[in-house]
Image (cartoon, rainbow, N blue to C red):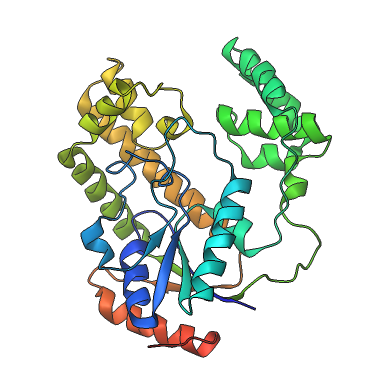
Length: 315
C-alpha cells in the first residue's frame, strides 16, 4: 500500500507549520484537507499558508476553485486520491494535512457517497421550505428519517440539515449509512496519522490571536472585495467562519468589535467539534504541543515516529 502521512487537529493547533517541517525532513509534498481553502481569493479568513511559509514544499488542492463553483466531498475524494497517487509515483511522501474531518476520512477510508442525480430539484424544494421559515419542520423530518445524523447536527444548521434530507430524498437511505462500507474496512494506505493539539486555554489563546491578526491583515477588505467581485453572500464559502460574521458586519447588523468577538467564539466552537470528530479515530497518535513548542524539535520527534511506522525514503 502507498504510504501516507496524515497531519490533523483543531484549527490554530499548528498543523501547517509542522506539516511543512515534516515534508522538508521526509521528502514530502502536502495535500490540503481543508474544505474552504480549495477556493480562490479566500486567503486571510482561512489562514492560508503563504508561499514564504511553504518553504519551497509543494502544496496541492489550495485555491483552485472560484467561490461560486459547486464542490463536494466526493469530488475532493477523487482529486485528493489522484494527487496522492501522483506524489507517491514521483517517489515523494504524500502528506495529507488539514482539519476537515470528512475530507480526511473520505480519502483514507472506503467512504461511499450518495448519487447526485436529481440533486438540484430536491435541493431547490428544500431551500424554498427553509427560506419560508420552516427550518424546525425540516429538522423534525430529519429526526424521523435519520436520528443518528440529527443527533450530530445543530437544529439551526440549515446547510447540514438540508444536505442530510437531500441524501435521504434522493436515495431513501440516511446520510449516516454512507460513512463507510463494511464494519471493518480495509485501509487504502499504509497510514501514519498524526494529531496535533494544545491545552484548551492555549488553543483558545492561539485562536484569539489568530482572529485578531486576520482583522489586522485586512479580513474586512478581503470580504468586501469578494462581494464587489460579485460573490453572493449566500455562497457556501462565504457562509463559513469569519466570512459570515464579516458579511453581517458590513450589512450593519452589528459593530466591528462584536464581529470579532463572534468569530472568536465560533472558531472555538469549531475547534471543539473537530476534536470530537477526530477523537473517535483510534489510529491517531496525538502530540500535545506546549506553548513554547519549537516546530523543528516537534517535527523531528514526529518524523522519527513516522519512519518507525511506515516505509519512508528520506533523501
